[in-house]
Image (cartoon, one colour):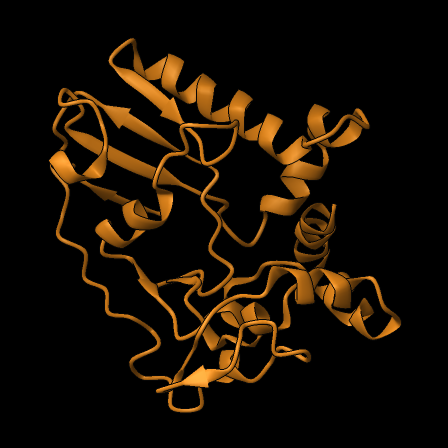
Amino acid sequence: MGTFHPNASDRLPPEVQTLVLLGPAEPGFWAHFTQSPEACDGQPNPMDRWSTRVIGKIAEQLGHDTQPLFPFGGKPFHPFYSWALRSGRAFAAPVHFLVHDTAGLHVSYRGALALTARLDIAPPNAASPCDGCAQKPCLTACPVQALGPINAGRPTGYNVDVCQTHLGTAEGQACMDGGCLARGACPVSQRYGRLAAQSSFHMRQFKK
């Protein structure tokens, strides 16, 4: 989902020369994940456990100079938001969520690989998809304005309590079944091929 050469501001050990951000490739990821042991064993946090196993195995195969990093698992939390921006392939959307050049607002970072090798990487040839989006439907898609009032064209904050309360009502069932309406309204998200079942899974995890 993006690669960059870290500097001192990225809160990584100085020996890390390349950071590779990993996320689901659509279409096809959901069918793969739902057949995994983690998705079928009934235990908590299946996606996080799947990510730990799979990305950990990739790091192991690459050798001892590769460290897997994750956006979950407790403190200290890694700054995946700022890492995504550093990759040049993700940007701050009008709703303040990350928007990716190919995944839109459905971008999901499951982990990263920190390499001591300095890989040759091409400069990202990406611009924020929001720049050419005249309608910006993400700003008005939330039925309860949980993203906060609009000030100078941007929401002023994300009210998690309002969002979660709405999900527990009959009116919130559409969000539970299909995922966040603001994320889904993004034209790039709609082209990415993520299934509604996957978005619903993430919404159920969030509501817990």
